[in-house]
Length: 433
Image (cartoon, rainbow, N blue to C red; front, side, top):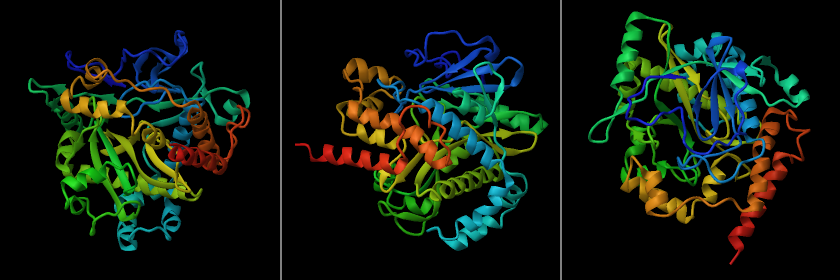
């Protein structure tokens, strides 16, 4: 992604933390390394200036920390496969035409669903599919690659996407984030109808219910009537489905994911109210597609997040970034099968308590405050738990896709078996004195 950035703001493309990748130079055909985050690198593609290449690492990040002490085997490989497959499916108009039938037995209000199926937006998806920036996969040499070839040849596929332009916020003298650069750029592009793909600096979080660990619970404690703002007719109960999915917004390009009111999110987006409404309805439809996709494999999707860019010539949202278990809260028979289980593993740690204290005491430099002032950093995973997490990502991809992408890479148990093993580990930990 290309960025214009205030000189005083940390680069969103260079991370001073140790790299999770081998110390080798990128292959010349992949072009320049333009971004290195906690879980992925982004390269240009030498022969295609409009494309970028995502290389997902086996690292993971929780609670905005960045690189954690461990690596999880085949995690990056799994994210690349699932992310690319989701783009292929979402871009297929036929899957949208099937969606109403797949949700007939869902717990959601049928009248609300019927109204959604009758929108112009849904009819367009049924004719054209969803606009997204996914463009398949490439190999280490930058050449196009199919999953079949990659799997049989033992090649880790890298995800190819269309470049979106990013304009991070500046930081004001009083520590506030100013998105004027982005909103002005969006306004000019929309007015002139120039062909641009502008990243919208929001995380759009969708929720189907309120499971344990959901941050929504704390907001409802602070604002008991907040559920009405979300469009719900009754107060949510823990571990129960909502009558309809809801959407919340968080900042994307700030050091921590800051909750935003819908009004502030709409302002930050730089879109008209009508266009912002289209963005929200698109997020809800993507959420429902994901719910149905995982549901047919007995995986319960409780919430997740998606990101968008805006195509200024066509005046429409474009799904960007990626979709996978790091962006979703998935359960199989009550067992978490996504990054949420790692969050819960660290949930009672002294380190997480220090993170919360640091974010309150020093919002701009909280990580340094946590490490240097409070003297806390995350511990490595328990070896038994790490072994289970090494298997979770590839097992999930195999099970969801119905293909043995990882059949030749070690011993990957079927997801139902792995869920039982994870539950047995959790039970043992709970019963330890």
